[in-house]
Length: 293
Image (cartoon, rainbow, N blue to C red; front, side):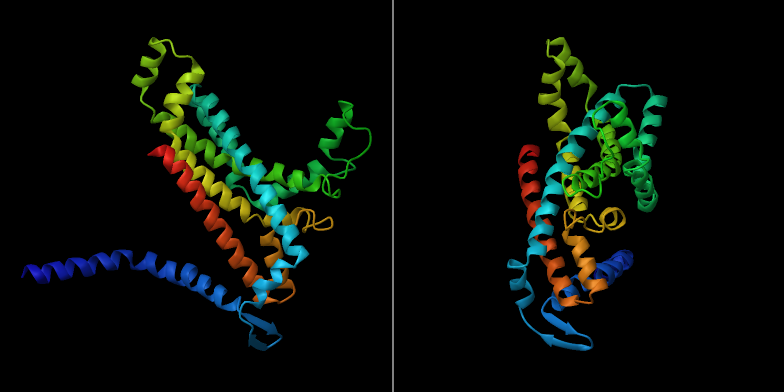
């Protein structure tokens, strides 16, 4: 009797996870395995041939891949630290405000995170417009620049312009998470530290920072993954230009896979990007988890 009940219980448990498992197998695991398989093929119209690792070996001498990889790593290296530091700074200043003020600023900073990428891009394209954009107008009024600057048309400024937009759309969720994490810091520890004469920096370094480290780990990993996968902003703002100055791996996967119909090579790029993200995420988890332990 007990064995029958145990088998019935186990079966019902599998029924509960069946929808999530079906979604994972259909839209995550199968596309991932299919992409790996396609990276070993070469497509010539309707003709498909097995080429093994040729698509991967071609990446080593592909200047477009090297440029796109360096741009992607540069974007991640600039955007992720700024997002973490800026969101933590804003969260600390918001947390000390009243409940109504805190709710207002949380909504303001979280709004870009839930807004359409297209609408955000349209706004920023107007800001960056060289002829009547507000950025040029403000900088010329302050005598920082003299003429109209092509922010998205100049290879030396385009990638920084894209990074600025990426940061503004990425800090919303980290701010919310940090405010929630700060609310879980025991008030007794903070009051005891103040009684013992600790200043604000000492309290932050020895009490607040270690306690919010799990949240920081989550923010660092997710922001890194999102930054590596930047695509919509690139497509809508620069299309990888000028002269591949803002081209990223994700954008080139779209260019080769959708526009050029080179599915094998695009799949190889995607597999390499997935491996890079997995490796960096593992390193980040190990580093930050060491401080958590």
